[in-house]
Length: 360
Image 1 (tube, helix red, strand yellow):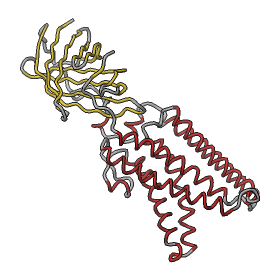
Image 2 (tube, helix red, strand yellow; image 1 turned 60 degrees about the horizontal axis):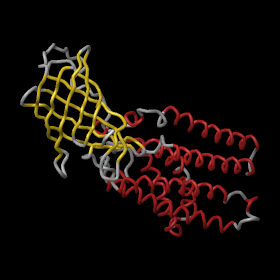
Image 3 (spheres, one colour; image 1 turned 60 degrees about the vertical axis):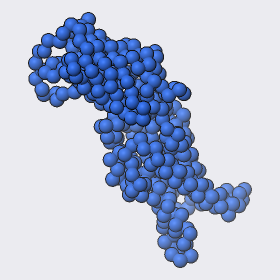
Image 4 (cartoon, helix red, strand yellow; image 1 turned 180 degrees about the vertical axis):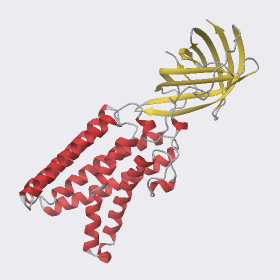
């Protein structure tokens, strides 16, 4: 299948956002494991306690650096409506507010840890220690954020990273509970809770981010969902039979938007109206993989065409050659073949062109 030349490829900021987010999660996992390991006195005869503590501190600082890079590149990418306030104030963003807010909470917790560590001598050991323990909550919160709002949540390599991170923290936590002080019953309850946490994360993922349609359920704005319903009129509107000419030619004016569907794929949506001939609406949606020359190799598509007062014709793209698109749509027993020639204005999302139709 040929490609749509006019579609834009993901920006460099998007790749930096994804990469820095994954690295930050790995560093945060390492920091959490090292923090728990400092309490395992049975290991201190092999590794000096101060060495583990120093490594824990440095890994945490590097994790904060990558978190800052992750936040900044997300804001600079501009794909989603995320503002600077969303980096510090959770749950207010119009884009996946809860899951993005979890990332903000994790970021705020780590910032609080760094700030209190810098002024530890002034605030006292007790307050610093309380903040330090609270910062451990940043790991599960960050993991939930990565799975809930990340574009790679359903990709195999990220699933492996998330699983390895969860197992690592769970293993170190179980060792800490098994070898730590305290009544045996309390430690056994802690191990059971850690196991339940592991199983709960897996069950939530399988029924949530691991299932198609999660983007809509996670709170992605409708404008960014390229695969939302193709119905251009209310469902309760009563269709009126309108006779289409056996052939027609109309001028098309619309807009093109591109968004990421997850992983390496991109969704492209063209939505507009027909004039000077048949009056109506046309919507094209296609999914594909970005190419180096700026185009997209199509892997799936959807088309909707409607004339005022008529039923909606739905179908798919059957031919794609640069800016020339062939589509086949149907409504009941009637089928239309559409030939769509597009002109894309450089630097703008406005699309114009000509649509020619013929009853099959």
